[in-house]
Image (cartoon, rainbow, N blue to C red):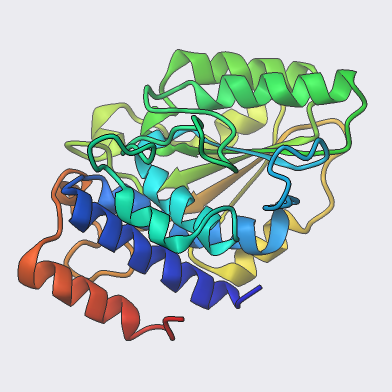
Amino acid sequence: MKSLENLACNIRLSALRMVNKGGSSHIGPILSVVDILAFLYGSILKFDPKNPNWDQRDRFILSKGHAGAGVYAALAECGFFELKELNKHCQNGSKFSGHISHKNIPGVEFSTGSLGHGLPVSAGMAYAAKLDKGRHKVFCLIGDGEVVEGSNWEAMLFAGHHKLNNLTVIVDRNRLQSIKSTEDTIKLEPLLDKFNAFGWDSMEIDGHSFIELESAFNSSPHKDKPRVVICNTVKGKGVSYMEDKIEWHYKTPTGDLFDQAIKEVKGKCNEK
């Protein structure tokens, strides 16, 4: 497996190219989770790309489905399918839709797009694993903008009540939603305290630091609690003119702006 830094750079480059070629959007929220995805797929998740349905694989669900290009790129980098398949992203008739889809795509567990669905499904998977005495773990990446969904808080209560210590939730805390900040939309803070009150083992880290990600995910899990890792991130991370800019939730990088984005990301890594 390539270094986490190079894996993250390759995912960023692929995501930029996919969004550009398909004329799609959501590059900002894709880039905010790239380092998290690189860490999970490069260091944490247990899987076999030659046997995607292996029953002992860890389950990963991207609840913020609009960042699907990042997961597609990570799966291609890990050998689930060829990198050239990514060129079909958002093309007519392609299985690689803008919001992540599991249909005929190895490595994707669940289709998401309507926010607030990923965590309830993940909690159900973790509960089923407990009942079946399965040894695999369940990981769910949610956006901070979707935390306000009532279905998520029901799932948090459920997971805490059933002591689902095989469930880890990662919150992409980039603090921006589709048209304004999360705190201007519906105030979330103190978010860590809220998870603690719902019976979770909670921590907050820099979501772009592999050192902090490693420390959080490799710490001993609480025997009676699900875990949440609130990752402070920057929307559009890695491309200077996109960072912390709301408009890149929707805009497509084209022309000189696309070239600049590729140049900036390449300048930070060795593309394979």
